[in-house]
Length: 139
Image 1 (cartoon, rainbow, N blue to C red):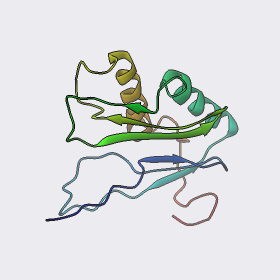
Image 2: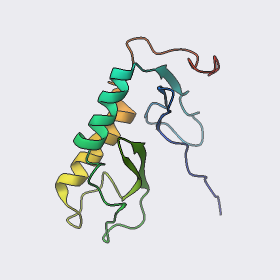
Image 3: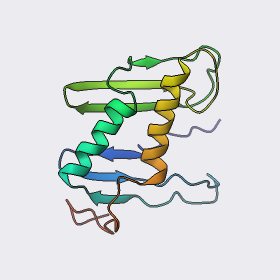
């Protein structure tokens, strides 16, 4: 039996406004290395917009801590952990990206768009991401 550890977070925003993420790309888990992390120092305005999008547009503010899907149990969970604007919670969403009638479709669409936006579009990144972490000087 082969045990594969849980992957590191796809996206993390730290309290010093440094965002660290790993691009979401298709790769062969056995032969291809994961892409390198990217990091960027965000402006306070970018942080405010990102958090507002996550809390309100992404639905994290009103979400319950667990978003189960009783029809799909053998897929990964998506986890959002947030501590901002008076909201301090962890939301676990079962089988995000797999269609099911078990959960409110609107909420799942919002969670999916948020996850895709953080991992894929990089709309939150400055035009030229730093090659080294602005806070530490290291990658």
